[in-house]
Image (cartoon, rainbow, N blue to C red; front, top):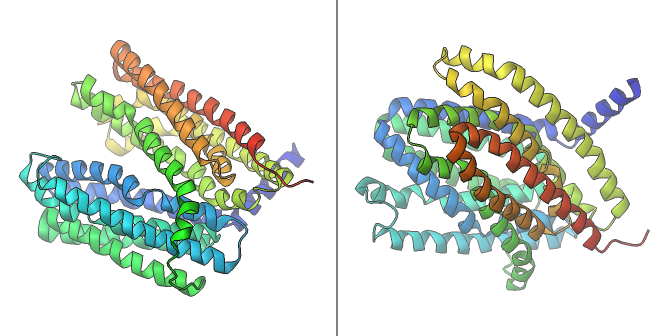
Length: 427
């Protein structure tokens, strides 16, 4: 037992050396900042305006994937591989330029379509969409820059820029929303992202020098990974939130939906460690894609650690969160407590696949992540409507467990397939 814990401590120290603590701290702060800003904005703006922001945010989440066209993922994959500094810089800057073209094209298309009011009949939403969705360009570029930092294993730099971006955004949103209402909200959102793109770009140029050298020949290499990543991300987004989409149609009690939503929000905390581990390990898996022995060793080592921490986090969540919810909200959301157990179990199972996803990505078999997400989506489309029809919201909560099991089985299967189909160097 003593040797076991010594091994675990050794693994954690190794993880922290890779910058895990810095990135985890950044992710925790982001969650806290985001939650605090939601509370402030809800207090400053009218309920109608908060609703308008939510609708525009939904469009933003969907179009962000299309606007970036997966060039952030292709940049991460290609720049993580063993290449010369000159090659890496060339692929990064071209990924950046491709993103400018794709995101600008998507934004202009949206502006044209918005002229015909196909996104909303609300006049104010139609008027706000040009400024509300302009960050599609800056956010896509910022994402490519962060992928480059991640690929270069500049985790401290990645964490610093991520935290700074959120702090600037939230301060600006609170101040300008207070003085200028919903328009101030979007002005702040735009300015903070534009500023961070400029800062991150010059930071990248200072720490990892590069020159502008447009090479359309790099597009085919980028697109090989970007297209699968785009499809995987779109399917994954729909799969992850299919319960909310169905609930909005099948459940009429908005108060109960509110309780379910709060439970779902608290459960997202369980994803902090796994998602951070995913960010940290992806470039390391990419750098070992030709060495099977080292690749398998790295995966098994950190996967055991991840599963242990997920298990401990789940137990603590189940024991502490019900009391915490009652204490924080003075039992206002007491009816959300029954949803916590099944949702936390389901999302913990789902989170246990994050390292498998990173390993598949590292091997360059990104289409297998898309297949995994597609399996989960098909399963969810079948399971959730039945569960909600017969057992209401509690059925949706327990369906999260089935959903987690489906994605775990699919991810495990496609990881083994990715390992088998990779051309490894002879030992």
